[in-house]
Image (cartoon, rainbow, N blue to C red; front, side):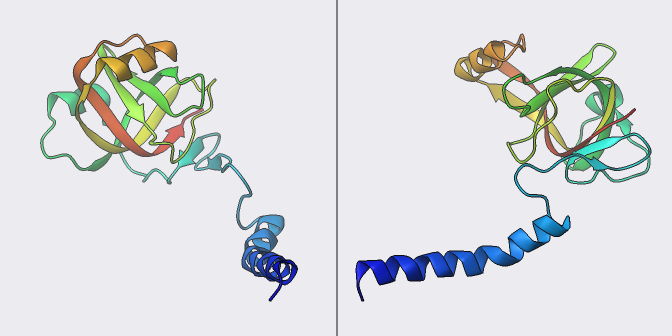
Length: 159
């Protein structure tokens, strides 16, 4: 088999593999590229996994009673959002503040603001000086050391 035939065969295999995905994207069943916001309820926008309905735990109450880490829905107000890729935000409730980490699984719009519900796991983390400097470069004023983080699966920004 010649190199030319190998390349032609490779192109055919790739085209056959991608054809169903491209067809679904054109039909609107599957987004092409970065996933857009999905409407969760009237006027709300959800990023990442869908956020379960029902009552959300206010952030301050969650911090006061953290037991075994488990997936929950937390509520609060959006503080800052990563201005580079939308890969993190802060969730505020009174004096309480945690960093919400998307793990690059989804992005939060850099201009997001207002009330939000976050579906994920709340836990303690130790931030190295290197990572603290990285967050400071992205507009978040943090210091190295122990703090709270929610490893988010989804974020719902309320209207």
